[in-house]
Image 1 (cartoon, rainbow, N blue to C red):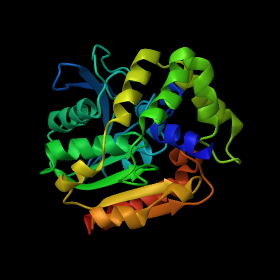
Image 2 (image 1 turned 90 degrees about the vertical axis):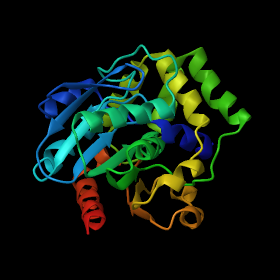
Image 3 (image 1 turned 135 degrees about the horizontal axis):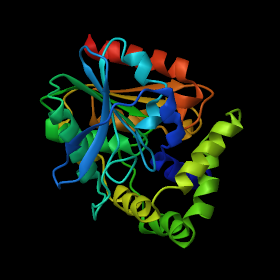
Length: 286
């Protein structure tokens, strides 16, 4: 049962649009390879440029506690992937490759030359896809509570089990999974905020995204990783972490665990998360 929740949990990253009020929004637009407009915001100055990428049913708002902190020292970019936030929704196939193109388009639009890509949940794979496209500009990759086991691939039975309930009733059946993504001590209001905002997602886009995510293997993407890859993860599902497997495929792989938090560690414990993320950034820079 916990494994069932975990697989869905890897996909999940969302916070209320209302949280935008915590950060002054400046909207800019880039155009992805397929013509879809990608909305993003830019804050601060300095190198490297930090590019924050949300996950399934999320938006750039999920980073509202990180943007003001890191913008004091770095140029910070936060974007809405196609189909989410206020980005375009005319895409037919919400593949990991297409999302990687979204990230690459934003980096190109900002003419960023020294970049650290930071991806939560589903976007662990997306930043690997983006790295393949712009690897001459990337100096580091940071995967937030994801990429626990490079060898993991969902089975056909997994896909049926996890996706069919969402097709039957997206609002009702997404709720239980979302609640299980949090530590037992998490703020109940925060938990329900996430549940409500997942329920407000476009079901067709959300399900389409999930279907393609299940068919996105990680190992082929590692050949293009020639920079440090850090995983900053919660201890909620630590039993699914396999650093011994990941280290076989990538010498530059590093794992750091945050204690007492769940899948949304950046909002559950933002001060500690920012401290840990800053330390990782400093190690990438050194």
